[in-house]
Length: 117
Image (tube, rainbow, N blue to C red):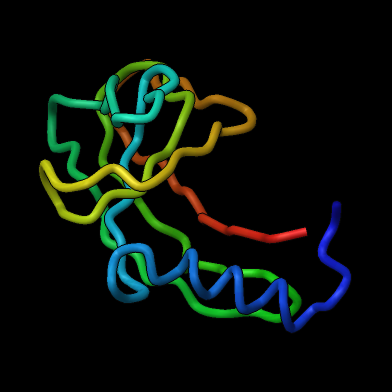
């Protein structure tokens, strides 16, 4: 069932934003579906998780500024949300559509968003 009231959708979206105790999370890249534990995170070269901050929209939406990752060569299929820059708690995932393939080390730009319907 879709949630009909926009204000209710936004309350739920803002609760998602607070999963980490605030609006800041660390975003990761993955070379396969990370499941529920965050497996298959990218590694090598100068890859590192990137910190991002959710901002509230309206009607159940959250947005984040575009994030830039330094990534090694490879195929990247998913992004993940974490509580810390390394280790930490894995909160969620989403598929990159389309997946991104780098033939050599380079940068990947991702603009995270979240919505409740």
